[in-house]
Length: 116
Image (cartoon, rainbow, N blue to C red):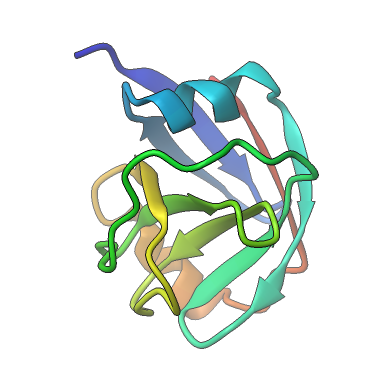
């Protein structure tokens, strides 16, 4: 499996991560970089990417630090403790425990997601 390194730039800090070698993750990567306006919902940040990438194999649970996509609204979702409201595509992961920075800095209103 190939790894696709990315970074999530919140302005105050940058979180390293990777996208998985899946159909939806590759479609997501094709249109990078993204500048996403974020909404906070519990321990999740999400926002629209403006593109419907379809659906392949949605799951109901995403681990902490997981990156997901849903075609219901064409949202990218950054999970740090929240359970998805509906099944989503698990497309990537923030490296190690770096996602814990989101607990201390969860009021983020935007993120730039780009290839590293």
